[in-house]
Every structure is written in C-alpha cells, then in structure tokens.
Image 1: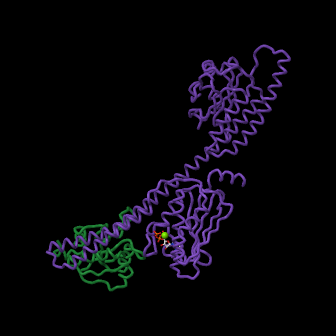
Image 2: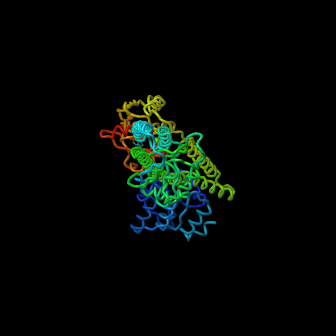
Image 3: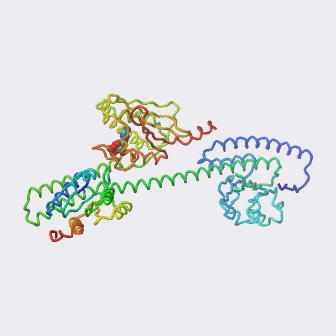
Length: 120
Length: 448
Ligand SMILES: Nc1ncnc2c1ncn2[C@@H]1O[C@H](COP(=O)(O)OP(=O)(O)OP(=O)(O)O)[C@@H](O)[C@H]1O
Ligand SMILES: [Mg+2]
C-alpha cells in the first residue's frame, strides 16, 4: 500500500491484517520504487494524490519498466478531472475515499482472483 | 436648422427695444450658466451623472423661464425612445412623466433622432408635415418648445426638449446654439457613464468567474481533506466489525482500531473547525479605509507574538496614499495572514536577521499597494507556483488556506496579489486595493 496520509495507512493496514492479508506500506511512490518489488500473489493499493510522485505517475513508470502488479487506485478527490485521470491509468479497480469493507473486498477480489476463496 | 417664423402683431419700437435688451441679458446669463454646466459635467463621477443632468435641466428652465425639460435616450435605431431625465416646474399642467415619444408622434421622433431640430414659438408654428406632434402639443399644451437631438461620439443617442406651458416664447438662434451645446454636454456625460457602467459589469463578471473557479477548486480540495480521515474511520470500524463477528479473538487489535477511529474523527472535526474559522461568516461592509492605520492596528495586535519570536516589524506608510474602499475586518485578516506567514518563514530560516517590513504606497493611478517583506528563507520552489491553491502547505501545523483566503478577499475588492523573491533574502507578498471612488476621479484628473 502506498499512501502519504499516515492515518489512512494505519487504518488500512489494521483492516487488511484483520482480513488476513500481509501488508507492506509506504508513505511515498519513491520509497515504494526503491524497495524490493513484491513477488507472488500481490496487489497494490495506491493513492492518487501524493506530494512528489503521484499514484498516476507511479502506474505509468511500472508499465514503462514492464513491472506488473494489479493496482487498485484510491483517491480522496472525486472531481471529473481526477476520475478521468484514474480511468486513463487503467487500474484493476478505482476506489473513492471513504469506502467500506465490501467495496474494498470487491476490488481486491478482482485484483487477486486466486485468493477469492479467502474473502467473504 | 429650422428657424421659427414669428407670427403676431408688430410690436411698438420702444417695446421691441426693451425686449431685445432683455433677451440680450438673458442670453449673457445663459451663456455663463452653460460654462458652469460644462465644468460640473466634467467633474461629475459616473455615478452622479444622472443626478447632475436632472438638476441642470432645472437650472436651465429657471434661467430661461421654462416649465419643463427632459432628456430622452435611445439605445439603438429601432429601439424605443425612453424619457430618462425630467424637470417640471411645480404647479405645471399635468404632463406624462415618462413616455415614449416614438409612440405618440413617431414621425417627429424619427425626424429629431435623424439629427433635426424642432422648435416652435406657438403651436400654430408647427409645420403641417409634423401633424402628429401638433396633435400631441394641442392635447398636452406646451405653448412653446425646442427639441434638440443629443449627439455623442458622432451619433444621435437621444434628444432633449425645453418647453414653456404658460405662454409662447421666442427662440433666438444664439439661444438655440447655447441649448445645443448644453445638450451635447449631457450627451457626452451620459456616454461616459455608460462606458464606466459597461466596464464595471465586465470586471464584475470576470471576478465572479474567477471566484467560481476558486470555489470549485476549494470544494474539491476540501472534500479530499475530509475524505482522508473519513476513509480511515471507515477502515478502522470495518476491521473492528470483522473482529467482533469472529468473536473478538484479538482484543488489543480491536482496541487499536477504536482508538484510531477516535483520533481520525477528531482530526476530521479539527479540519472542519479550522475551515469554519477561516471562512467565518461575515457580512461584508465596505467603507473608505485608512489602510496605514489598519496595518498599524494589525501589527499592534501581533506585537506579543513578534516579541516571543524575537522579530521586529517595521511599517512604512507613504504620505501620499489615499483612503481605499474595503471591508476593514477582511483587510485586517489579509494583513494578518501575510504577517503570520512572514513570521513562520523567519522561524523556519533560523536566521539571525529577523525583520519584517510592511510598506503601504500608491501603485499605479487609483490603486494602493500593501507589501509584506520578510528575511526568511524564501518560498520553497516545490510549492512556488501553487502558493494560492487550497491546502498547499510546507508547514506541519499549516492548513494551506491563509494565502487562498487572502487572495479571495483581495480579488473581491477588485485587487490582485502576488509574491516576489527579495534580492537579498526572503520573500515579498504584495496586494493592491482600489482608492476610494471620489479620490480616484480627482487623482486621474490632476494627472491628465
Ligand atoms: N513569506 C513566505 N516565505 C516563504 N514561504 C511562504 C511565505 N508565505 C507563504 N509561504 C509558503 O506558502 C505556503 C502556503 O501559505 P498559506 O498561508 O496559504 O498556508 P500556511 O501558512 O501553510 O497555512 P495556514 O492555513 O495556517 O495559513 C506556506 O506553507 C509556505 O510554504
Ligand atoms: Mg499562512
């Protein structure tokens, strides 16, 4: 998970752990890129608006470098321009904050089809 | 110009000489009245043009012993002719106050609007071709009248009429020349008023447009700012619910989720509280303001803060600044926001030069500039071109709203705000305000 907002990170981490996931979280796109790229059955929860590199930019970089990770974009803004930007980045799913557990799980199920038996 | 024909009995020589003498004196008096009128029209600010014209219609009637005069305007050929200014002597016979001459006597109205003069010394003088106005005159009763087209900018934009109800009167060619000059002065004043009004409307429109942008920008950012803690709350409570349905196997984690949610809720409330404070509802009340005194006031209010932070604040007010038009509470907030930012910038720089200078000086004609310079580290290049956007901040305790609010206030006053780096160190933020209306007119006159 990449989000610059500490309380959002903390909350999502808690929630995902309770749901039984292993969670790695990063406060910026730069730090995520500098870390070891996750292997195995993984997906990326990615905030759109962050100081420095944005979530959209990170998507583009990953596509360019051929590294693939099913990505769920999340954003606190829902204006037309943001929605269009999110669509153009072509993620597995887009979530607008605040979202509930059901919505989050539906997105993760799309991102991790092999794990779907885990989640109800 | 159509000259009136004089019909009537031949006057005895002595009476005639007396009348000519009287007319001569009346003409001289009227000539100096028109000179005065010309000065008054030039002096009148756009807002006062209508009032001035009505009072001068009265002055003209009094000077010439007339009973009614009126100014008519037409926006474009084919449009109705509107009565826009009138003066009527008390106790005059009833006369329609506002009427469209084009309805009552279309032919004559068109004829005058085509640039022709019409005057008659008695109703029987009215030429037969203009039968429509003759009927009107017989019905409403002016015994003598002069109708003069009103020119402005090479076009006829209306007309003026001068009438006498009680008795016939003669219109000498010299008198008509003076009247035509007075009407031309009315015309150019009206034209000036219209262009000022049009310019104001255009400016107001521009301002609402930029404010509308600002608002939608603000709403988008605001929802983002609030959605962050709301999202966190929902995640924490979602996790908690999940734990509870499983019989709460990890009570420590449940407690953490609850504590997180409480903290996030407080954060959301704090954001709302600070935004409310920033945009505290306040009924705008604009008056003429001594901006130098206002700056002094704000600096006094913040003296305690400055002392704690060991910052000295210098004020330089140029003696030639006029009063500005503004809302004093809003303008205090602007100065305060800039001053607080300057204090923060100096604290950030940890420099030993700890000074802020506030200057109040005339900007271009009609405007006053207020600038706040600090000896801080200057604007961080990472935010330099987004300073005035909502929630852009480099401070851990900042909301990033101070400059946004300041900009929206300054723009609602018609001014502008910008920042420039100082040649040595630090930054200067400057905003402009319009000088109070009357002063502005006199300033531009003495300049031109
Ligand atoms: N005098 C200054 N010198 C350097 N940077 C400045 C100065 N004034 C403003 N800035 C920069 O512009 C940013 C936005 O300023 P703004 O006043 O809008 O918000 P803020 O001061 O961060 O928070 P607040 O909402 O409390 O005012 C600041 O965070 C700072 O980075
Ligand atoms: Mg500020």
